[in-house]
Amino acid sequence: MSYEVHATLPDLANVEWTGATPPPAIGAAIVATINGCGPAIVTGYFTQEGYLGVLCDLLAPPAWHVRQNKGNPRGHLFGPECKPAETAHDVSTEFGRACFARDWLEARERTAAAALGAVPGIGSGAMGLTPDDVKAEETYRRAKACHVAAFDRLRDFNRTFTKTFKSELAAQRAATRGAKRAAQRREFFEDVYILPEAYSPDLGI
Figure (cartoon, rainbow, N blue to C red):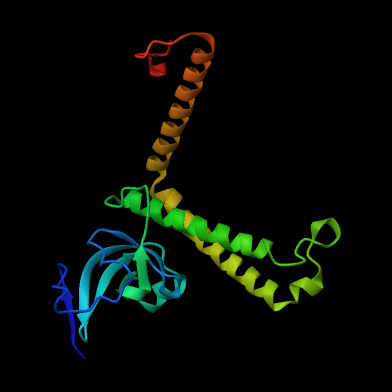
């Protein structure tokens, strides 16, 4: 079985890429859709039996994947097993990559929570509790298991994320608060005065 690693994108005239979109560039943010492996960064390429795949670092892989690969969260993905990802974060930095992973995990948990909340009969019992007959249904049990798994995965990621990037997160929160205060000052002065175009609320007027 032929297998070769490539540091650059091979000539597509000689290999077949089976993805729905063009092969992602090295450094690009993608989502590994197979087995729910999630957010990843492309690090290279490989070819096998005439087909092209991407090598990637998985940013928040499932626990079973980490155990199976002895702590090395690397991925080998063919075209149908991944898709491009949209993120506002700078994934060339460790913090940006971690924020990209956190956003994906949070979205996944929200989706699972919504699916659980949509199960017929949930919360229909006394004091908003879910009746036992509803909990016994396969639909509920599957939705509950999916939400628990998504919640646990996000919780475990955040335990490390908040400690590793404590200073970056503090700076991010400070910037957000500063921008909010500046917007509030400008809104106040616009209500009271006619402001010149050069006015900046950062001047502390």
